[in-house]
Amino acid sequence: MYLSHLYPTPKDFTENESERFFFGARVTARVSGLSPLCAQRVKTLWQRFSCGASELELIPGEDGFRFAVGADSKARLGAGAHAGDRYALFADGSGLSVEAVDEASLMHGIETLVQLICPENLGEGTERFSVAAAEAHDAPAIPLRAVHFCVFPDTKLYNIEKAIHLAGFLKMTHVILEFWGTFPYECEPALAWKDRAFTKAELKTLVDLAKSYGMEVIPMSNQFGHATQSRAAFGRHVLLNRDLRLSLLFEPEGWTWCLSNPDTYKLLGEMRAELIDFCGEGGYFHLGFDEAYSFATCPRCRSRVPHELLAEFLNRIAEDVCAAGRRPIVWHDQFLRRSDFGDGPIVANGDNKNTAAALDLLDRRIIMADWQYDYRDGFNVTTALLMEKGFDTVVCPWDNRENIRSLSADAKKLGAYGIILTTWDHLPAWLRDAAFAAGCVWGEDTGYPPLYGADNATLLRKLYDAEGSFERSGWNLNEVLQ
Image (tube, rainbow, N blue to C red; front, side, top):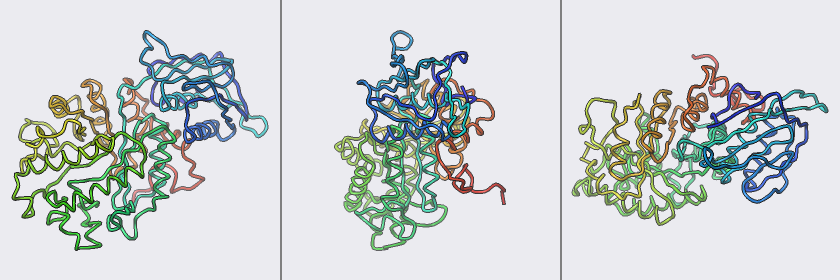
């Protein structure tokens, strides 16, 4: 192959460089099972991984989920050792082919295939490329593989675009979009900054981009803590910096939504409905629910037993989300007590107002997102506990490589429901380390070469055209630390 490594590493891959398939500036492929968005993405991937010198034409192929160039498709999903494959890839001197079980898996196979393209001549009129004879059989070790991206007021949308490109190409299944005062809600305009929100048309490009890779977009709205839609460190509140008359929607400090106010419940439902409509079809909604430190401080809320109020409110929202055909996801921390665990780097905030007592009262259709950013070396007591309690649980690392590696291994070992890679305000770390993280999540082999950062940059420039712009290329806005 041309690149030094395939990202992420296929489960089973062999290559014979003594036999090659050759092609030039124009290639025709027979394809079936791709939406128009995904079909256009395939054409773009082919062109970019051919160094801008080869164009792909797609014509209708046979039934199923197949892609073939040259001779009839020879890729076949098999039995025995290959019974669980999601896609199969085959290349020899007569052609290239991919067969898959669904659209997303076909995209995954094509994403592996284009990495095999080797340029031999890029001169205009003499373009020549080859792919060595190869065979791959592949399936992920973790079924649900999501990445969570925040759209802050100072976010550059092209950086989110780059992040989504990497997530899609590296075979993630879901992108979670959380808007921090940047989504222009029609139900309540004060939910967005007057001078820092994006238009829906601008944000829709992110949704369409994710879908072009076969990914599902999970909408997110923090519906308990983080009600300011701003980072606590900087003292802003999206709604109350615009209209103080909205104060009763929140606890007195404004950090937490007031769960006793029926207007709060109504507004949160309107927000969810608008986000669901915006993001399109999907199976999940992320409700947040972390770090609600000022919970049950207003006169109405503190007249209730806190954990009963919390469970009642979350179950009511969960019922609404399920009625909309989705499953709710919540962060775990308010539902575990730090004092219940011994030594170890545990994130658990349920000692506050004894909110951890709500756990046993919750609807088991709720998915627990266990964010533990200091777990290393298999030390994971919380995921196992949540699963024992009957909750589908996803593990959630942040930007430390050993944390990502360890929690990915835990997800496989424990049989967790999936993984959510979080980025928060450290988006450049995802852009730099995406290939490493995807390798940990996809399969068993995480032993990437030490220069994976340079390889990651190679992938990024093929996926995203910075058009020569310094600011839009790479993953930092500067070369010198000032």
